[in-house]
Image 1: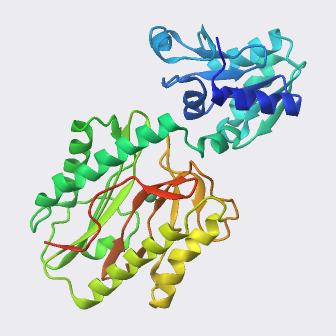
Image 2: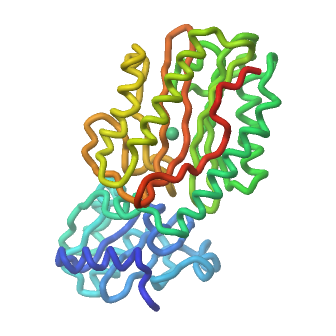
Image 3: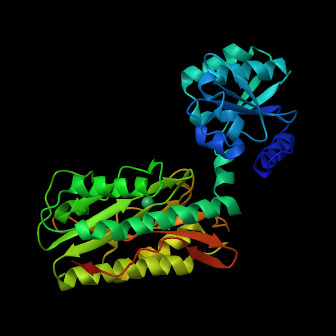
Length: 358
Ligand SMILES: [Mn+2]
């Protein structure tokens, strides 16, 4: 079985670190490395051959999905079974994902593998590989972004006085699923009027009135990959102040997009957006960072925020989502998904970005 390029990178790290194995327990990391999309399993990456441990429910599914690793069906904890098997293969030093293992599971590893194995906790090993998308992943993300963009057009006609936040959220999620999504990438945000000043508002039964801001933030998971979009519209004729703020947020997003390219720091991209809002006297209303990586998960590396010295790399897919949030008035956020190419960016989301006044 030829090892996949993704596993190949883990093997290189194991060899360089003189580790006998790496126990991967985060299920998205497992999926990324060997294709398995079930809800229970652990992957032991080992130079002599990797093994996925899962249970009987996935006996058939693994035949279709898993590549680059053999499979063992076990009863009880896949994690403990993997640790025990590692010890049987005479592993002496094994790594585990310390940010994805509970205290009880960590004890279970020692119990199952015995005293012969020394465990080393590591963090972000697979996540850092996931930050740079390969061509197949980019294809999936283009499709997810196209689906997310289409949903905006489908939902716009329903944005009118009398509709409730929960109703619009339900419609967005229905349209995403109808378009092929396995589900929403996160809890859909629909916020009217003053509630839109809450960046992470939960939809309520509040009814939309005239002359109000509407913030919609939604994302779909399609073939495992997420999109994440936000649009802000105004019901009625927007006052000058709102139009000015909207333009400032749009300009901030454009500045971030222009700054985004391989080699710049994540903080520089954030600062590009933030400085536009600062010049318009709005930076104190910008309550979060400019964006985040996107992929199998809705929040991944790199994080485009203040103080983030990580360098942007070709293959990163990030959101650009500046916003302003003013208590009692409302919020404006515009969010698009952008892939970093060797010489710039490819904008994946296509929903219209101008201020829509309904
Ligand atoms: Mn986002």
